[in-house]
Structure formats: structure tokens, C-alpha cells
Amino acid sequence: MNFLPETLFFVNEFYDTMPSEVREKTVKINRMFSSIADRYDLANTMLSFNRDTFWRRFAVEKTGITSGNKVLDVATGTGKIAFQLEKKVGETGLVTGVDFNEEMLKIGKTIAENNRVIFLRQDALRLAFRDNSFDAVTVGFGIRNMASVERAVAEMARVVRKGGRVVILEFTMPRNKIIRALYSFYFFNILPLLGGIIAGDRSAYSYLPESVEAFPKPKELMKIMEKLGMDVEYNLLTFGTVAVHVGVKK
Image (cartoon, rainbow, N blue to C red; front, side, top):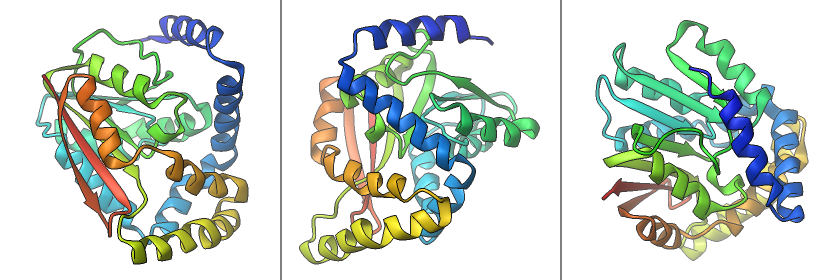
């Protein structure tokens, strides 16, 4: 299953028309993930006090997938969600993980030697799959890094079958004022410092809270998903710091 030639065509076609400032941001983010790839999972687990495991498990359960299903994990990184999805679909199913960062994929491919997950390098804004190809599509903590949230959602909605689910797991800012204040202090002051120590790149973990603050609020993301032809609900987890959106394609 080699989608590489088609993928390269799509990626080049899209980036040729992308505004220079957006293209530069994309390149910068790609380099940032390359610099922290080998410590990315460890840093996430430590900085979230191991809650990231629960968040991913919750998102996987919301896909509603069963044995034999075909699932796509977008911005898969090292495959944390993809490997959990694999357990759900079993030997008769198929899980494909796509990401635009080669260093992250290399780690996932190494882990996947004893698993049935297929890893491909693709851009989420131009997926090289036919319409209605998957029973579910997931993305965990990756959509806020994309040049266009709406385009990324549109692509995920395109490749999932009717009645299938698009599940988006992402950080969000808490609504409660007291929790928001405490969370913001940790997020903007403590987290970059610890991230720099653990992952060796403080700037990457300074970017994290900035990207979360700029990302659409849960209700705004729900409206984007609804506009693109889905019935949507979402759950807020861990004091409202994480949102899981579930969109069912009409």
C-alpha cells in the first residue's frame, strides 16, 4: 500500500498555493517536532501527570469501532493512538497512521515492527485517500498545529464513511475562572521550563500553550464540524483542560 507518489503530488500542489507566512509556520513546526521526537512521548506523560493515557483511551472509545474496521489516525506522531485503535480492530481490521514529520514516524515504525499499523508520511490538509475510505478517523493533539483547522476537518470528514465518526482530541482552556488562572500559570510558566529540561527544547513547550490559546474554543470547533456535515457532541475532561469532539458523518 504505497501512497507516496500521490501524496507528494498533493502536498506540492497545496504548498504551491499556500501563503508564504503559513508555509513558513508549517516548516517551523515540522522542525520543532523533529527536535523533540525522541523525548516527545516521555515529556507528554510527565507533563500531563500521566493523564494523557486516559485522554487517548477515552477518545478511542468514542470512535465506536469494532473488530474488522478500517481506521485512520491523523497527525499520528509516534502512533500512541494508532496502537490503541489496533487493539480494537483486531487481526481483521486495519489502522493507518499519517503524519508529516519523518522523525516522529520513524519512532512509530520501529514500535510497529510487531504490530499491524501502517505508517505513511502525508499532510493532513491533503489526504491521499478516496472518499468514504474509513469507519473512523482520529486526531490527537495535532489539529491545532495545522495551517487550516477547517481544511483539516474537511479532509477527515471526506475520507470517513457515512455514519462513521471523526474524533478530535485536543487541549483547550478551562472555562472556570479559578481553574483557568491556575492552569494558565502552570501552562505558560512551569510547563515550558519542565519541557525544556525533559525534551531539551524549551521553545517547543512555549509554543504549546500559545497554540492552545489560539485554537478554536470547543463550541467553535463544534460549529466547524457541523458546517462540514456532521452531527457533533463533545466532552470536556480533567477540569475542562481537554476536549474530545465526536462528529458523525451524515
